[in-house]
Amino acid sequence: MSCHSSTTWLPRSRRSPGEGRSLLASLLASTPAGEPYRDSGLLIVSELVTNALVHGTPPGHRIYLSLDLDPARLRIEVHDARRNREPVLRALTLDGEAGRGLHLVKSLSTRTGCSPREHTGKIVWSEVAA
Image (cartoon, rainbow, N blue to C red):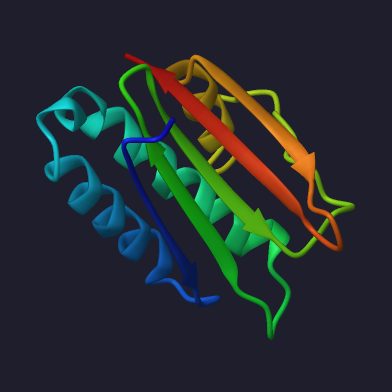
């Protein structure tokens, strides 16, 4: 059962990753159990929301962010509008300026995944264990 959770709709805006980080920071600050998740959680939220903005949210759509913290783990879900565009883990290059986000998410997460939403879009999620 969840101890602490928070959700919000984020606009298709460059400010949305920061808004997502602020929401997570508030959630984690609401309990002493949140502190161990702070650094990795903030980076994961930033990367997943940014990916949803760039690759999964066409004009006129929003992103849904769901955060769930219980004694065993932090779960971050980012819902976007494009079902046919699953996250792609690209090969890393030394001079590449993009394509590192999902590698960071995978390295900081205990589990990650992507699931279709019931009507449209997808949910990209990450879990970080205590």
